[in-house]
Length: 400
Image (cartoon, rainbow, N blue to C red):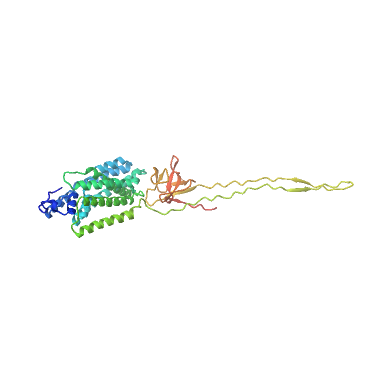
């Protein structure tokens, strides 16, 4: 929304100093009088305020994303983002930050948190109900619960375009807003799903990704609006913008490396090979005396015979395989993957107290975790894969 200049501008813009003339030409939002500025900001605040449709479509989007988590379908993730409401409250937070309006900031933040709470509840209910179909792969859920660079680029571009178009009349940034919903609602629904189902590495990892994405969107939106000519007119406005920027930096530093829950490793007993002794053959000299005969020169000729003893070879004692049980903090167990890393396809989800055999393959350290190769015993087919060592509990064999 752009209002025409008022009488406060000089009739001849060339009469302004050179610096002010250059700033006036660069401004995307014209300089307004006090009354015009109040009307302009009031209209912009109305466009960025949450409505009933915002909460209704937030519930619908969360339900579709939850179905996509259960079905491990990225297409439903995209559909849920496209059906999400216009993310106007996020732009409202950015606008109130650069203008220093505490009232608008509180209203926009409260509306956004309310909609996000509904999304989190839908995800938790879906996770609780999905226990009927366990085990599930949940590959896409684990991927979107990690901090990666591609989503940052997508939602960054969406934040810039949404902020630049939403504050103007007769422009509906639905496509850029879908990018914001993709970066906010998907990890938040995944966090709720992990909270309701107890699947590890979904809660609170998804909540961390949501928080970092939100701060990133607010900072880029505020920067875009500041470039368009929105400036604080009071000291409080600069203070509010500085506080939001500081919180964003703290979150980026504190949560930037948190992609998964870090737990301590549990040592597994290493089989010790028993020594094998080989008996070497020995020669035994047995003298056999010959009785003397009546000869001119009696001599005794001892005959030496060699009697080899039987060679005995000790057979190695077979070392029994190391057995372990799956034990995790939740009630659903761990994930068996094809390769020793978190991004590898899931072979199967193993419930707690499942008995496995630790294969003699060399353990692999990847992503801060030690992976071991195991074989599941209580399945009809031979199921082999890699699992984190800290999710297994072994029984130490006792010497008889």
